[in-house]
Length: 277
Image (cartoon, rainbow, N blue to C red; front, side, top):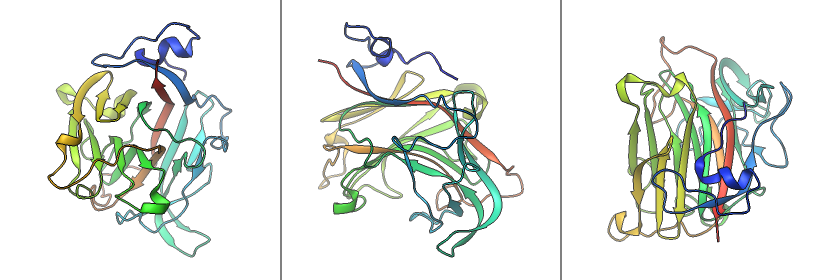
C-alpha cells in the first residue's frame, strides 16, 4: 500500500522544487536518492535491479536456524504495495547440502545501491513470536575488504519476537560489536505491539552523528564521543541496505510451542534521502 510520505522526504517525492521539510526532531532536510515502493504484481520476486538475495543456511554468524532462499515462497510482492518476507517451518535442503527446519529470506542492495550519510527509512509491519528476529539494517560496503565489524553495521529496526513492543537501534564497529554494541531501545506505550500495524523506522546519518527514530520520534543519538575509549568511528563511507527475518539465533533463542508459523514481515516502502543543499 502506498503510504503518506515521511515529512523529511515528502516534498522531494512530490516534485517540489523547494527544500523539503524536516522530520520531527530532525536537524536536516533531504531529497530522495533511492526508493522501492514495492508496487508490483502479486507473487512476483524482488526487483533485481535494486535487490539481491543472500542465500544459505550457515547461521550468518549468529547460529540462526533458517535457510534463507531466493524463492517467492519466502520473499514476494503481495500485489497491494508490499514486499512480504515469510518465515516458514519446513524442512529444506539447499543446493549446498545444508538442511534446516525453517526457511526465510534475506535481501540486500550491495553493488546496486550504497550511500554514505542521509536519511534511511522504511515503513514495516513486524512479525511476532518467540525466536522470530526481523531486521532493517545497513552494512559497510567495504565488508569484503576489511571484514566485520571493521566495515560497520547500523541496525535501524531490530526486534526479537518475544518483545513485540520494542525496537532496538544499534551501532556495531571494532570494539563495540556482537553482544556489546552501542544500543538504544524504543518501546511502544501501553502494551502496543509492532506487529499490530505499520511503523516507520529511520535513521538520520551525518559525518559525526547518527539519530534513530520510530514514527518520527527521536529516541537515540550517537556520536564519536559515545564510543568506548580506544575505539573508532567507522561510519564514514557508503553502506548498503539489508531486510531479513531470521529464525532463532544467539539473541532471540529458538522458537517454542507458542510460536506460530508462517510469520510475515510486510514492507510498505524503503526510501533513502540525501542531504539537501
